[in-house]
Length: 154
Ligand SMILES: [Zn+2]
Image (tube, rainbow, N blue to C red; front, side, top):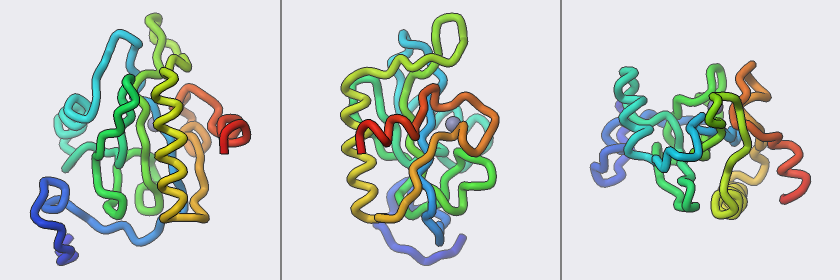
């Protein structure tokens, strides 16, 4: 609060709380079913309804591969308990099957977008440690093995 950071008065700027450390890039899923073609607008509403000051993630990747910008890169997120002060959060829409179980149901366009986005973030934060939410919590999020994905793609 009161950081004095000037970014032109955008929505995020007004609410911004600067993050000092960036040790982790944490990958999440929205835990939504394949029929739910949602994105930033819906997720922001869910989070505001919980009383948060903005959407909790820094990036949302829609089913069509579009990357939507949530909190600014250098703002504190709200996505992984105990890690928000030192991480950036990406959320892939999807990750839940019709029977409510965890399911890797992401689209090819989402995988391409994720790879591009991760590489882009690595340019700015070259030592960033890329992990899945399930590596720092007991949740199944993001419904796939991030370490295997890294080995196969990065
Ligand atoms: Zn998560």
